Length: 156
Length: 87
Image 1: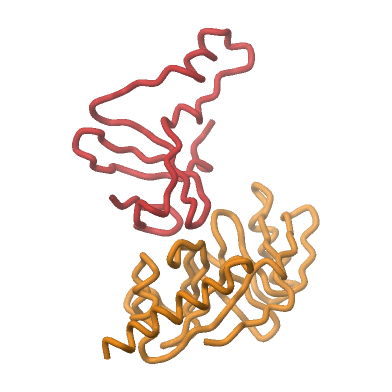
Image 2: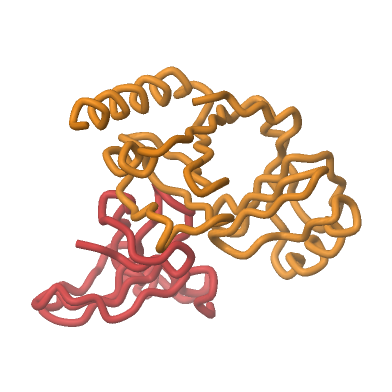
């Protein structure tokens, strides 16, 4: 389990009817457009993570005046990477959706719950996930993941 | 109970918040008169059968969803994003 530091994170919510243009402008600025619902995309410079109804989290500096509402959320999210052989079993104890590789593939992302917290979960590798939660929940997030991991280990 | 969110797919009921009848999407005109506004604000059908509700995908994508369901069989026929419902 390691912390993922997102230096700059903004929430992009395109104005009604502007999503196409916002996506094009984004593509010009960071090389990535807006991803489809439930998908996260990245390149060397930036990341675009679908974050819900008409909203995306973008890890980059962007300018979208007139196209989208852009809110700085750099300090609002705590993000951590969890990886290892039993990672799906650990998350299965806390998350109500099916995160197995057969349904939740690389680049898939979901807004869902972990224990009772609202989180964004993205698969970043065959045995690796990134979990984002509100920063005030960071301690609880780590605690719950550690407790679940201990239980999975105890079962052997 | 599971609800299919148009954005997220089939999700557990605990991710959703129930608002009530989808009549909220049919707001009367401001000059519609007191009877129409009284109906809109206070009067609801209580059907044994098909009904339309608004649900909020609170612990998910944050979308408002119009759910068509049957109060007798508990079957859910369809779900659509409230944002795409024509007003």
